[in-house]
Length: 472
Image 1 (cartoon, rainbow, N blue to C red):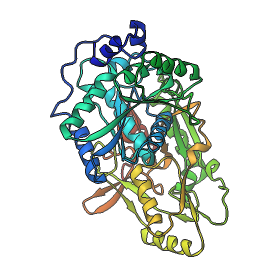
Image 2 (cartoon, rainbow, N blue to C red; image 1 turned 45 degrees about the horizontal axis):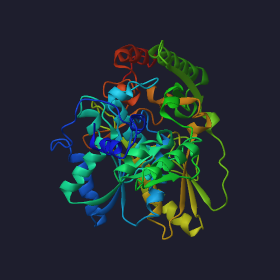
Image 3 (cartoon, helix red, strand yellow; image 1 turned 45 degrees about the vertical axis):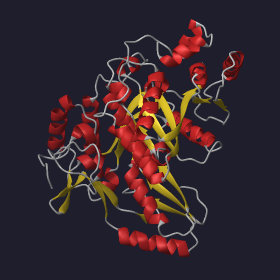
Image 4 (cartoon, rainbow, N blue to C red; image 1 turned 60 degrees about the horizontal axis):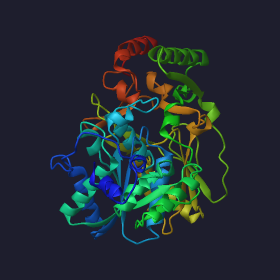
């Protein structure tokens, strides 16, 4: 039994209480650190202390399957930060420690091993980068051990790392009120706990606090009382949602000189090809007519609309594209290219003079963290008093997130040779070139999430549709 739980036993807690506090039997853990593996967390803590010019820091530790990471987790981190700021002014960093596959695989509708979970976590963090500043993923417990372990080992691991780095940090373990009894082991070991209210668990938490008082424990538990808009959100319900592959039919604008009948034939061929790819799977196909996205956004006179979408008309359309390397894995972009950056800077300068105080940035779906951060930088660098900036995603017109889980989103123009803005923008030597989403240069497994055993048939259908053309 881990030392932390042994201390519970010494305080007079029953075996039932110890189990409620998260204890389960597993092979003995003898190793908390590994010099060849710890670099991510150790370097991150060291770098965080260097950037903040202090070794007096706060660390939020958050464990779970994160399958997937979602808005409920985001709220939990924000609520934890909000509370810690009422206690001290020291900088706050957060560590996400995903669970071992042994535990994750026991969950309903489990869909991913640790590697796919980490990819999703990183994608979600990029999409919501403002909420994930100073947050790091530590996969040690999920990949270093041969089995799932008590969360107390994870806390002890960070205590050991902090000791090695000579960093004076306060660790705050954050957990949901559905695991209120975790407070028993935290309090008996003088560990700060922040319990986030998820459902109507007030009486449960009150019982935990009453029990700790009766045991004369010096408890440091916070029952978060902030309104939680995601109290009923959980990863299991998200995994149970309909997986939907959204295909946007933008051919009306991407092929303005092609007749409607031909465009419709292209659309039918592309849709049928995707239906064949995912036939028999749990992924359904939904086609979106781009005209349904050409909606007017309500705004006041001092608000400007910046469109990152190729066809949605804003007050200014910023022609920005991610740039990839051909014939590579292509999971993330190498850089991005802005065709009209100088014009955009001139527009922002004039907008400031015209009294524009807020901006709405429109895109078809969530852009990467790097792209949105760069666009924000271009705007904010021209303002002394930072303007309000919000993002509007056209996909949200069609998606009820309580019903759908977005598998992927693609535009039809990427599959039709000769279409405007079609294909993947790549840098070849010193020039930019677009490659269609069926050419050898584009990795369809990462760029369109087409299973590798289905790619050949899909490409053949696209080449036939384009009359044998692969390149312009």
